[in-house]
Length: 144
Image (cartoon, rainbow, N blue to C red; front, side, top):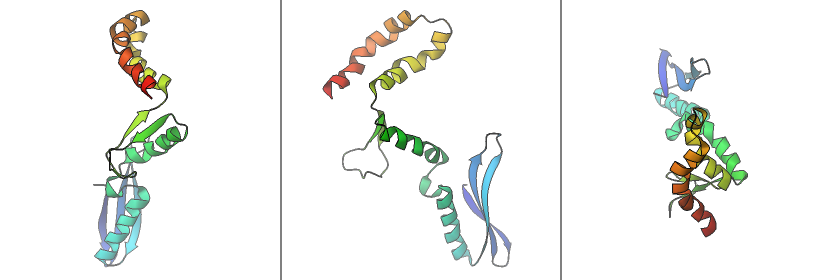
């Protein structure tokens, strides 16, 4: 439940919208006292949820990551790819790392960092993981 109403008296309601948890694990809420009929208050609750970014299935994670993805897109590090016929602002797209060095890092190095810290030799990592998938990883670079 992301947002709900609590009756406070005759024609008075408390709109309460859950915002998530802070760094200390405490739950955060956005609350407003609203006066009016149930229908008017429902409309104001939806507006409050829009203000908090929670309406229409927008999750807290989406609100947090969206500015970062926009920055990566502006820097041409990542780009959003949509299925054929889908609206640009629609759902169902995916993000792709356009920077080849970062793609390599997140594909081959990042998943094995703990192994490398625990004594996995880089040449063993290359032989077992990188060498087998390097051709497939590099080929799209030459195709673009």
